[in-house]
Structure formats: C-alpha cells, structure tokens
Length: 283
Picture 1: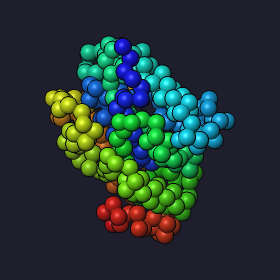
Picture 2: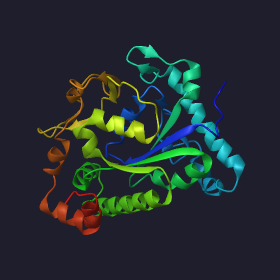
Picture 3: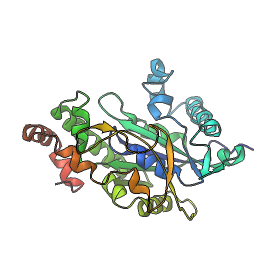
C-alpha cells in the first residue's frame, strides 16, 4: 500500500546553483531509504515546470488544502519514476528497489537558488504541506560561487548580492523551522562518508552500513582551466567506496576556481557578501 502522503517523511535540501547541491543530494540518496523526485523543485512546481504560469497560486497553498494536496501528489508522482531511472532505481550497488520500497522511502527534495530560480522561497509551503519534514541548507565558499556564475554571465556584484540574500534567508529559516541544519559544502568534500553518516542521523534514518556513495558525473573546472567531467559518462551516477571516491570528487575545486577571480572581482563580490562570508567562516 502506498504510504500516506501526509505522514511521509520529507527532506528538503536547499543550496545555490553551482554550490555543491548535486553531490549533497546524491549522498543523501545513497541511503537505501532515501529517494528523490528525480527533478529539482523548479522543474516540478517552479519556473521550469508546466505549472510556471500558475505559480502565484502556490502562495495561497498555505491556506488551501487542495493546493497542498496537489503539491504532495506531484512530488510523489515523480518519486515513483525512480523505478524506471537508469541510475536511481538502485538502493545499493546492483540491487534494485521494489515498488513498495519506493512508496515507503523518505522523499528528498532539492531546491536551487540563482539569478533565475529561488526555490528557497518554497520553504513555508513545504513546511505546511508535509508534516514530517527536515530541512538541510547547503552553503559554499562565495568566491567559488562567484567564479562559476561569472563564467555564466553574472557579474561579481550581482553574485555577491544573491549570495548574501541566500545566506540571510537560510539563517532566517534555520531560526524559524524546527529540524533545520546548515552544512558547508567544504566539510562534505573533506569527509564525504563521515558527513553522510551525520546527515542520515540528523534526518532520523536508521543507521545503515553505507559502504558506497553514489555520485553523478558532472563537469568541473580543472587546473588547466578546462571545464569537463573527470569520470565515466557525463550525468551518469556511479558508486564509490571510501578509497575510490577521490576519483570523482575534486578536493581542490574551490582553490582552482578562486584563482580565476581578479582582485576587482573579489572586491565587487565582497562589497555585497562580506558579512555572509564571515558568518560561515570563509574569511
């Protein structure tokens, strides 16, 4: 029987675009009882979804039960798609989920913020929609974010403004909602398996002897200034042990990206984001 959608456990991961959400999301999903709705929030109910013209209605969702029911139904419809996903259908390396296991599994939603998306704005709706909910906020060194966004046409000044706005909202939500944890991407990079265990404990999942983490192959910037992926086929997911996870994770990625910023880039960014950078010990 499908789990009651009102009582199901939900994790909401919020981070910045190019802020490490891909790695954090996949580490969470490496637990056998945590699955995603395949797509990001903005693709399911936001700007890139078929509901984009009606997003204003979501603001009323807090008071209209039928809207909250539609949000639950939409996310759970996508949750079932794990069964047919070439990568997400596995709860362990080589072992597939059953339909019943997918139904019962904790749903892990990913929200991304950038100059185009502001999925962090759905926190109040999610809190009102799902009774058993945990929030994880992901922060990353602002200079690395700035470099990533500059390559995509966003000025350091605007990057700094968005970074500061995101961090302020994150801290506000952490004080507003119970069961809210803010983590640094750098801490995940430094000790992915240890952070995985800490995150599983926070979201109250049973201790599981996780021998492998499943990570998606994404493009990153290397010291030769080439933007490419370093393992397997692009956008495919692979399982890694404690000994092999360095094959896909770049531990020096922040340093590589920071070197690409000029002094003026740093100054323009810092004029907007200095307080946020100091708060999360990046300065």
